Amino acid sequence: MIRLDEQDRPEPPLSADEITTLLGFLDFQRATLAWKCAELDTAGLKATVGASSMTLGGLLKHLAYVEDDWFSRWLHGHDRQPPWNTVDWTADPDWDWHSAAEDSPEYLHALWQEAVARSRSLVTEALADGGPERRARRTWPDGQAPSLRWILCHMIEEYARHNGHADLLREAVDGLTGE
Image (tube, rainbow, N blue to C red; front, side):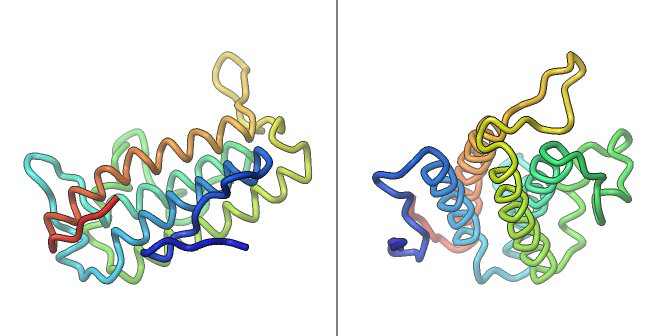
């Protein structure tokens, strides 16, 4: 049985196998981002703090990209899909961040939620095809490929890092604090 906290985030299991624990922490981090971005209008998703150009909308779009990049492109070797395949990443390596200002809140939330749903399916597929040791289909220039275990840990780190940013941004928008 999944326990939910005060913000309806799924609590990671206190005692479970490795994969269930990793996926529990990843889902908790995903739910934290959803909580920090919930019920905001366009202005709220475009708000910045201090000298940074980072926004909650940019976080949603960036993490949608990261979900697709790691679980689809790296882990399974799939080509980039829309909207990621239309971007000249060499000319604009931060496109995911700044292009979010042109998108509606509904689009940004849907883009991220659909990426998360795809990732969950792709992780299930990889677990059935080698488990946590399953290597990514794409490799670094030296030929090494990260394992699914490494990718899951990296994604937990990616969300945890950006959820710290989301805390500051959301507090600046409407004073919401917590975690």
